[in-house]
Amino acid sequence: MATFILSYPDKSFVPRGSAAEGAPAAGPAFAQWLKLCDEIHRVLGRIMVLDPSQIGSVPSVYAALLGSPFLAPGKLEHPVFLRSHLGEPAGDDAIGRAIGEAGLPVRAAQHPWQGQVDVIPLERNRFVLTYGGSEQGSSAQSVEEVKELLPMGAQVMAIELSPTCPRGSAALCFLSSGNGKSVLLVSRAALKSHTPEDLGTFIGNKVDVVILAPEDSELYASECLNVRGTLLLPVGCSTILRGLLVRRGFQVSPVDVSLLVGPRGGGPRLLACDLPGLVLSDDAPSYLLRRERLHHLCSEYPT
Image (cartoon, rainbow, N blue to C red; front, side, top):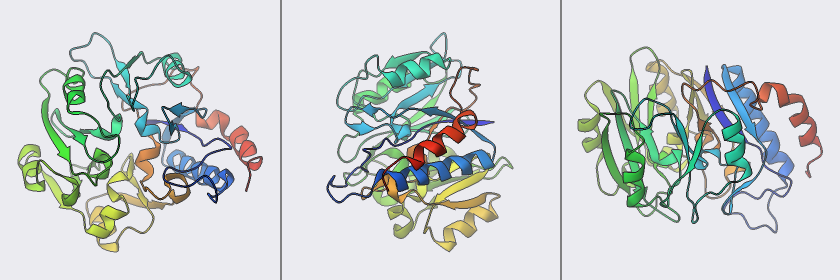
């Protein structure tokens, strides 16, 4: 079963890029978050729910910025969850403690690093690690730090993002349908140091490299969330892209997260931290157990 970390917005939530004055109330954003969770649960994804907190100045609702797990046997003796470094290293905070209590040891990144959004796993022990880009992009030094946590023998391509790209997940998305047909979605304009053709050479000829149309890139189609072969795709993506993905064996389900990602934009993948292969402990706060209370809590939010 696919497992994810998600964190709901608090009552004072304002999407990134929105002015506090005149921003939509938090209630509708929370309702969108609950619909996203229900959709993940519908397609048999499991969710660990974290209570709202901050990652530096960033709301924890952007769960893919919390960090990333490294679970496969490699240079470490045990799995670890590497916490992101957004302007300052993550300390012993509520988020780290909750992840630790769920059974995954936590350590803090030592260099500026945005977390899972800049780690793109491919097939055959290959990884793309991204850095640079706009605003608080991951540093080049973070690439070397993350490399040390990858499985033994991992092959890595480090890609610098263009100044207009906020994070690696806004540029790239590797998708496997489980039936042998894999796709790499790429935004050409988001890449600075490499081209989609370079990626095609690195990843091999058994994967279709699909260059996104500008309108799909602007909607963050690469930040769709793959849950057991069902793609939760940002609302508004082109029929051409949706048809291409369906023909390659994926189910496609549009999900509206616009009130959560705000003017800066993003897709469902920005709101979920993937925990591939991890079985959560019984103490982990799962969405299924908390769903009724979360819906009641949403009814108390300002609308």
